[in-house]
Amino acid sequence: MRVSSRVLPLRLSLIDRYMFREFLLNLIAVTSVLWLIYVATRFARYLAQAAVGNLPAEVIFSLLWFSSLGALSILLPIATFLAVMLSLGRMSSDSELTVIAACGISGNRIMRNVAVFSGAMAIIIAWLALFVVPQMNNDRYAIEERARVAANTGGVVAGSFKESRDGQWTFYSQGVSDDKQSMENIFIEIHRSQRPLIFRAERGHFEVDRMTGDKYLVLENGYRYEGEAGDLDFVIAEYESHSMLIEKGQQTEVRERQRTMSSMELWQRGHIRDLAELQWRFSSAIMTVILGLIAITLANAGPRQGRYAGFFPAVLIYIIYSNLLGVSRAWISAGTLPPLFGALWVHVLMLGVFAALYYRQRLRIYWRQLKNNAT
Image (cartoon, rainbow, N blue to C red; front, side):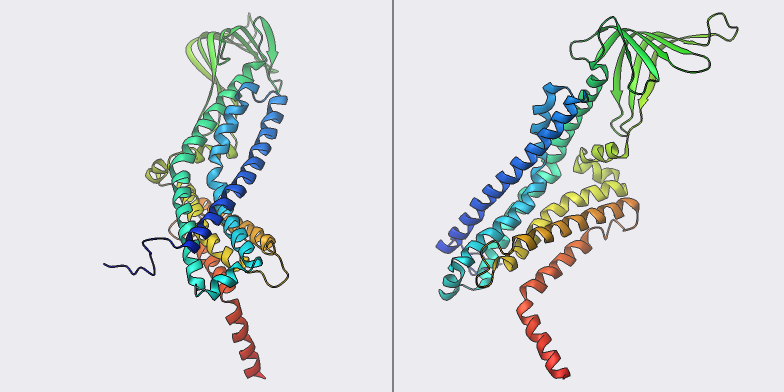
């Protein structure tokens, strides 16, 4: 099938190259600013966790690296949106769009360039969201869990006692490995008002259930003493491996684990929560194209309004769009919305917002005609 050169030109014209260059330069600038803000915020959060002993200081920069790369799929949609709006807004305030229109270049040409640019960014964002970011989140999650395990034993000094944070048990270890992941010659006393409970083990280490977030202390080759010494019901049990639940995983940890799963794994599992996560990843790419089109309507500032007149409405539209996607994701996970319908209604709604903004002049004329006919 032959495609008309008016739709897909073989060579980009000077105006097309100029617009794409403006889009790209603004995209780099906006992404850099947003990325630096995100990195600074994350760095402050990790420093706060390290200050209270919940996170070893040596893993801060590794976590910062993986989290900053994983944030690109979130930052690029709004960066593309703002880049298109700022580029066209500057061209409008400098009367460049007026000159372009006077040269016979229609608004459809501008819309086509914006669609091509946003579509290219959507492909990149889809690749990041579906394949790269889950792996980054998985690596970050693994480092965080190892760091939390190390934090549990970070205060353990060979030959000294340590009380748990909630005060329910006393811990003693004769030695701790260099990576702070395992211990030797362990003694644990569980504080109970009746029938004291004591554990002794040759080795031990902490483990975290990747699915539930529950934290366990796994003891190897030891004995379990229950009751008072000398009582008739005093119990001594020998074990090769014994797991003790130290901390129950929170719901946020379960959702965090879901973000680390690959897209293929989510599709194969087929649970409604997995499908909600999968649709969330697809939505970031669809969102990029729709926001790029909406940026066209916000960039055409009126007289004496300036190039940044549409900045506040743009941020407001993005917040509403992203929050509606979050609500749709929660509804799918809760079973309120069918996965087949999913987040489609949000994208259709925002396409309606684009159509209303793009044809707002015609809608005003039509509304005035209706009022005149009514009177």
